[in-house]
Length: 533
Image (cartoon, rainbow, N blue to C red; front, side):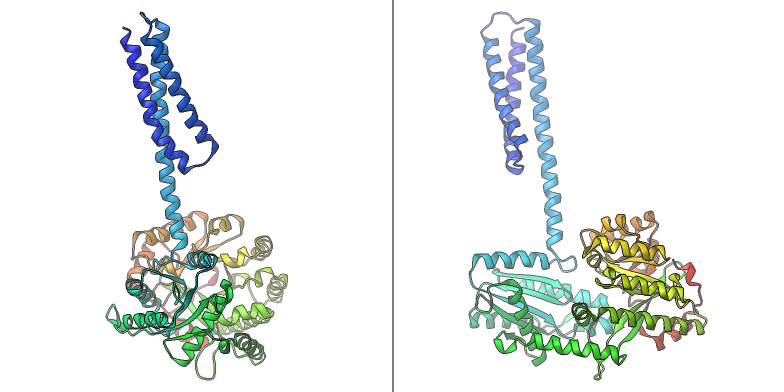
């Protein structure tokens, strides 16, 4: 009879000892004081168990109380072991999730390369270490033409294959990242001219073989600008700007790469010239509006158009909006640009009415539009004067623009929503605050970012994201738009998922107004825009 309590306490002591290793692992992973106290308690319990065990071995007869106590101690040791092991498993699972979240936050969803945030961390670490390094800014030549001619699907596939090929040939001491669009940044642990030349020769050689994508062959050339740390700057922003300046000079000269020098530092003059040109463009009405249809999935008929601002040049080229819109925001002319867009949309709505076509136009709002009370006042005046119905306009906003001043943006969007305008959240899923925006702001529509749509068939993750966004929108009572629909397969899957609107080159590229009317006639489209919300 004496052996049973002794065995119970002995096994309890063993179980407590078995809990020490996972408890120590927990303390290493989580430095909170609570786990450290628990570890000390386990050690204290071991001492108590050992003392009681020593006591039991020294007595001739064991009472019922001592047997019960031994049983309790045995059960307690099992409980402690189970709690510690389950806690460790939970912490390890959370750590895996956290690691995955961090990986996703630091890597580009399309190419899998480190993204801009990861690049900033890497270059900051190098700058802090103060060892010399070179910074390369790589930009694809004529990439926009690829998107315009064959569609964004092929453009994205090209970026994926390019990233894979360069990653395979670059040395291990290179940090290669995609920071946006067709722009890549490379960090190299050398500033020697011959090393830089060898690296560029390696990149050029890798690009000699064309890229074969679904029977299309693409010959890719890259323009690269290089700046040196700390020779050209010991601060990250100027170093990046100087590499960017050198890259544009390489693109201009049509050479593979250009090393920065002081003679190239004319960016301020260029921006000043473009600023003057922007004011002239407004005065001379040089801008144009192009319209890309949003196709209603259930009947495959266009209900909405997105208005896209274009700035044509005498040589037939266009200055990209991502160049002149930020400049307009900086020099204060963005208000005039927005007013120009509104005035022209009102005129174009009248043209649509003459053709007996009811439409709803989507326009993109800038950061400053969302912070300018005069913008909502202008819309109110147009509605009051009978020139515009709120049901004819959808206001598209990005998370980035909203987060610039959430409070003011909330007030203005609430006012516009109260007037009857619909609010569409553009590029949904690319930021970190999308869900809180849906909770805080009067959002009527969600536009799934094209990066997720284009990659739906590249893996389960992007497909699951698209499905989840559609499900979320449906349960929130929001309509949902999928941007970047470039293939029939993706279009058919989105229709099966009951995505409300599809937008992309598979259906139609952006059209000038003169080409929109023949398109509508071809579609046999005469719908009431009031049904499109």
